[in-house]
Length: 239
Ligand SMILES: *Cc1c(COP(=O)(O)O)cnc(C)c1O
Image 1 (cartoon, rainbow, N blue to C red):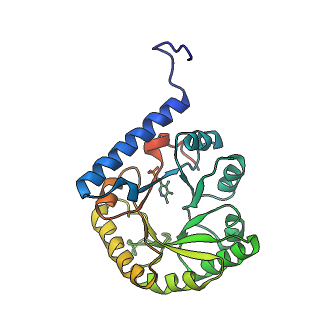
Image 2 (tube, rainbow, N blue to C red; image 1 turned 135 degrees about the horizontal axis):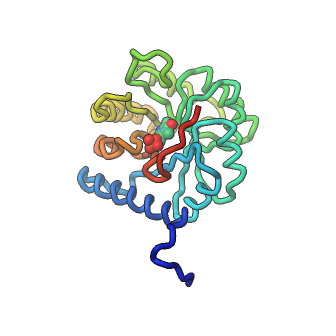
Image 3 (cartoon, rainbow, N blue to C red; image 1 turned 90 degrees about the vertical axis):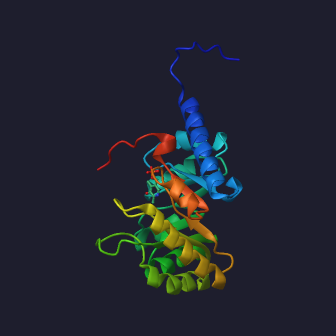
């Protein structure tokens, strides 16, 4: 045993262990309130802007899934961390970077247009990998430049993803619009998912909920939570 004085600063490992446990407790409580089994909810820790050393510590602490939103940062970390983790790409993705992302991402959660789906398919085929895809849905049609496809476009894009070689349609994802009550948004996503699984029974993933709103996502049926700050701390401001 190490002798640690009570006043010694907590190590990063202690801090992450504490935060993961606290988040898991909140997940468990929200599941109890919703009558759901916590085993049906996967925590994805979004490690963007944090170093690969944090990702390695999270893996040691039992985290199985991590999320990143930028290439090449995501690929560099995936190459650095040896632990077996599922890597989720959750950020906006330019078509010309799609091929590179398919070399390390297990799931791309931000599929929001046919052109991107086709590029991912070509990349996955070239890499000899199967890449899971979530159709990212946007519920805030008024704001220009937002990532995601409008609800009425989901079926067509999902059908395309399901047909493309190298891709596996896993389900849907959303980021709740800033400043709106997230609950109705997550419920709407749940209804879209219910419709989707009728035609694509394997596509039951519902990725919703971040540090501020994941309890509402659990109440609405989310299967995957993407949580950054509540585990890693406030991100340094990046330009
Ligand atoms: C950063 C990010 C998250 C995590 O957000 P937090 O507020 O840090 O929990 C989730 N989803 C996406 C798409 C993100 O970019």
